[in-house]
Structures are given as C-alpha cells and as structure tokens.
Amino acid sequence: MNPDEQDIREVIANQHRAICRKDIDGIMSHYSADAIIFNVKPPYQISNADSWRGVWEMSLAHFPASFGTETRDMAVAVNGGLAVAHYLLRFTGLGNQAWLRQTVALRKEHSAWKIVHEHVSVPFDPETSKVVFEFD
Image 1 (cartoon, rainbow, N blue to C red):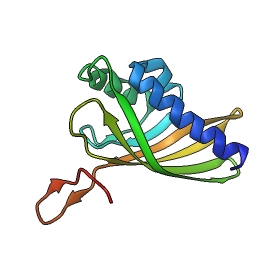
Image 2: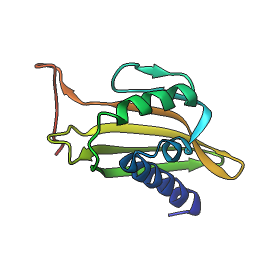
Image 3: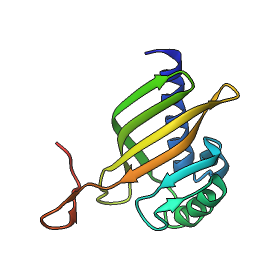
Image 4: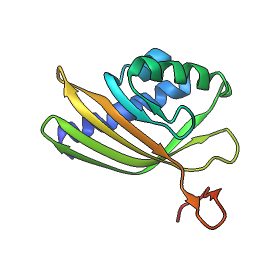
C-alpha cells in the first residue's frame, strides 16, 4: 500500500469515527468546500459542503447516543492528485441496517486529501423493490 492510499484510508476511518462521535466539525473537515454529494435519502443531491453540513446536523439528531460503523471490501485507486475509494458501509447499534454502497472521489488540496464527490446508494431487489440487507 502506497502512502497516498494509506492516507485516504485514514481520512475515511477518521470521518467514520467523527460520525460516531456526532462531531460535525470532524465530519466536515474531510470535505472540499465545493464537494458534490449524491445522498441515499432526500435531499438526493447536495451541491456544496455548507449544505451537506446542514444535512448531517439534521440527520445526527436522529442517531442514538452510541453507535458504530462497519466497513468492508474497501478499494482505493490513486492517480496523482486524484483518488477514488469505494466500499460497503453500515451503521451498527441501530437495529437491522442495510449495507450502503459508498464511493468517494478525493482531491489533494494543500497536501491533504479532501472529498470532492460522494455517492451513496442502497442495493435493492428489482422484483420486490425491497432493500437488500445482506451481501454474500
């Protein structure tokens, strides 16, 4: 694993720890000001970090005091000052939670990796239109 890939994995891990602490500043410290987010719930498209901060503030109010995250199958590709990571993510301690598919694009800004695009989706069974909770 090269140093950039290691740094990106740490950015993602730090962001997840900040989410579990309900630390808005910690969460947002990983985003570029011009980040574009495709969210799994409304609003489905957020056009900058300030607006995304508001979504997090509203969302975290509905999370319990204690919860965690689980990540699996992470892959990271780096090419110069741009990188893409994708992985499966789910929240733990909230009951039966579906795996989310998450892709983040990052750009190196002043020697730090910042998220410039994030896309979250939930897999579903097209025959039933129901969310798939477990992957093989």
